[in-house]
Figure 1 (tube, rainbow, N blue to C red):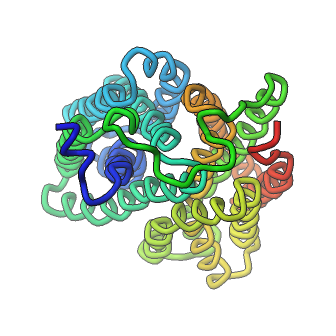
Figure 2: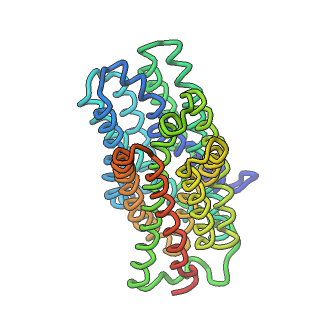
Length: 409
């Protein structure tokens, strides 16, 4: 079996990328981003209040945050292949259980467990990049993987409204069951395809060897290692907070601040999913060429402009430009962060480093919308929240310059 897999007409690492696209499609795209589309039907079907639905969404983030803390330990025990499969199975079970819920408490518990499964599947999937790809190809590989997120946004946006039309108040239940079935199929495919490292198949990682072989790469000294992790973590926190501020409130802002109909606002938002398909690949490849520091600087600059336009109140065309810019840069930061962790830390330390910075990210996306909601409530508009997001990403662009080159100690 291993010999036949190693004799494919293309490097097996690209199958790892395909599996990564599908895994992110399920564990983040369907499990998290489909929730926004399912929310109206769930609210009507269960008679839940807005604050209860907000708590359910937060439960998913909390579950993800919990999984970030213990995934490195699980990886040492189970390795990436089994951890990914277990995570996807937990996601599928959580989705299927939610389809059967009739009240708030079990819904909250199951969506929290779904968040735990999402973290268990996502983190080792991204860590595999460091195993299968050398530095010159990591940004491109990670960028391809995050296509799964945008694909799921488009998929759920087209599928779930159709199911709601067909099945009425039961549409959201049918949707969760169907998404669970898709996730289960992807878990089985991951069990078949994923290999923990190229050595299992007698292969080398994809990419040219650098002047200093990566196996002999000297990791930063402990003090510099901690500083690099802190900078990466703070950058990821800024991204988590700001992209969730925008993603949570931009459609509501279009309706309440700009006077758009819900149909037009939904059409604007649909462009995010389309443009996000190219974000990780474009900026990941760019970071392969100009370095992770330069890539992060460019992405945060694009996001800053997007948030400034959203908070400017200048009208429809600047708002459309904002949506396009947000979509173009939507998944660029996760792609570059994945590559950066592989650059700065040895393969053996990549899982722990990625989990740590993901903890910052999860914290940012948990608290960002809450603070933005408080600001919007106090000002009667979402514009100040978007301007705050612009300040945060502008500061992050400058902070990215603090990162050393990977070859430096």
